[in-house]
Amino acid sequence: MINERRNVLKKLFTSLAGVVGFSAVAKAAAPAGADKQVQGVVYDQEVPLFSSVTRHGNLIFLAGIGAHFEGDIKAHTDHVLKEMEAQLKKAGSSMDKVLKVSVFLHDLNDYKAMNEVFRGRFGSKPPVRTTVAVYGGVPGDSLVEMDCIAAI
Picture 1 (cartoon, rainbow, N blue to C red):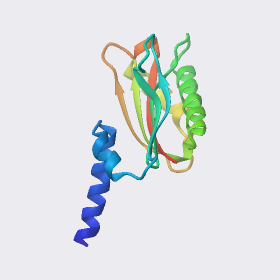
Picture 2: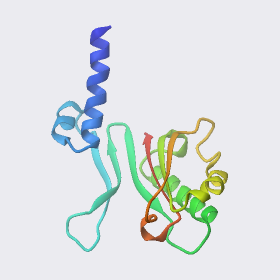
Picture 3: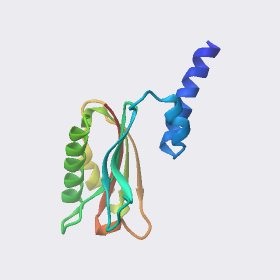
């Protein structure tokens, strides 16, 4: 029982260590080829600013996705969720395998309308979710931005 618990804690720490940047610890405990950058985002630099999609073990991490066009919260939410679905499919996952979503709203008054579009997009068992209103707004004038963690 104690060894089983210790193994679970070790796996959890290894996963968290890789997420927060202790890649040497994560790589030492993870199987070969478990870490894979899927797509990097470059902003006029040779070195990517961040990765839009990264794989670690059997998890996919999607960076924040926004909607950078004129429209209301429902149009922006629909666009973000469709883009999330496309990126997950490209990375070998799906909306049904999403475990965690973070939602960043430009205005908390859009919460109800965002939920109307969000509801039902993740299959019969929706992911856990955190929703916050961002002081100063979402970057790029999007009304909503979302990121997620999904299983493969």
